[in-house]
Length: 235
Image (tube, rainbow, N blue to C red; front, top):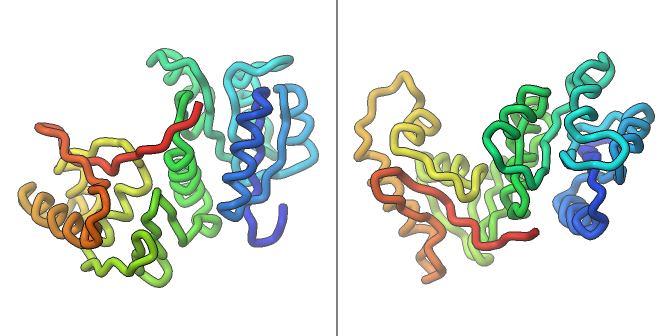
């Protein structure tokens, strides 16, 4: 592993997708290694110790599910986080992938920004020292260490609560969070705050983000909650 640079192993037989993933992951500061079938993936894992594995379900030689199972049963790789990439969208398939030991599951076609956010979330949860302090989403940039936000190059001035709200939403682009879920994530489950408070802070966050008259990235879902919209998708 390159010191200070998290290593990601991509096990994917679609060469064009692998190239696209490599380009974007390296741009984010990750070191990338590749394998193009399940057997090669297992061989690479014998030689390398990646910090995270992006694993396709439908692989030649050895299936992604079997690769994941072997990762979990080998003492030397049992703690390596795995995100499965698959065209299989049925709930039973997702459950099977997670039960086999995957830490997360992304259905094709997926957005690059969502994938990058999932990678950061998994690394932060499992190996906090590897998590990136800089998060990019469309034209929004969060610098956690400096507690700063920029949009389209301009500074966005946020209060502490609005910053935490944006930080949470940006980790899960496109996912809708209820007011109660946002209260738990941002204020904490042991603090009593009225759900209406979320609406007030979302309003402040919107005003700050859209000061330059950019497109509003926060979507209100009636009777459900809020999400950070993800406009970009790849197959």
